[in-house]
Length: 75
Image (cartoon, rainbow, N blue to C red; front, side, top):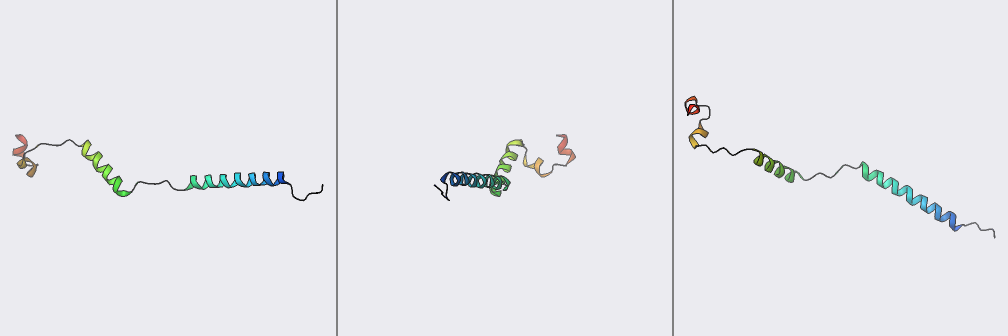
């Protein structure tokens, strides 16, 4: 009954190896930088937010051409 190979010890050893490798994998995935959206999507989103937050001014072309004219500002 002198066996040099024990299947129970082998199974416990494999379970320890799998557990340690899983812990290392999770640690590495956690340490990696997070995925960022591409720059084009970020710019489109920023442009849409800016357009929705700014009110559209309905002004005549003359007022848009000379915004600092004091005579037109009095009108």
